Image (cartoon, helix red, strand yellow):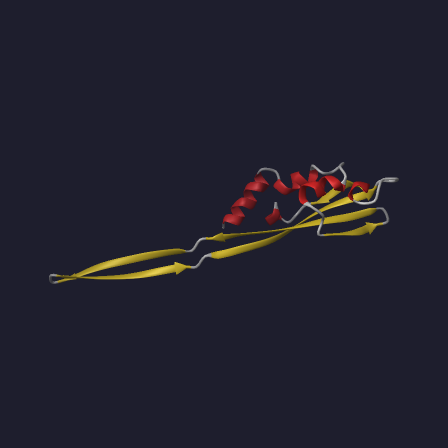
Length: 129
C-alpha cells in the first residue's frame, strides 16, 4: 500500500525519475556515469544511436504486527480471561527499475561515455517514478 502511495505522490509531483532522466538530455553519457556509475548494459539501436540502461534495485521491509483481542468472562466470583492474537510476519518488498537514455555518437569525440550525447530517454515504469 505504501508503494502505491509513493507512486501516486510522484505522479502528482510531475514524475520524479522522469524529471531526473530528462535533465540529462543534451549532456554526455559521462555526466550520467559520474552520478550513477557505469550502465548495466548498452546496445546499438541503429547506426549512430545507442541505448544505455542503468538498473537500480531497491527493497524495504514492512514490519510485522501482532493484534491481541481479549475477553474476560465472570462466572460467579471467578474471572476467566481468553485472548486471541493475530500476527503478520515482516514482509520484504524488492523492486528492480531500469532507467534508459538514448544517445548519439559525437563525431570526432573520444571513445567512451564522453563520446555519446544524450538526445532522449525512456520513461521508467510507474512503480519506478
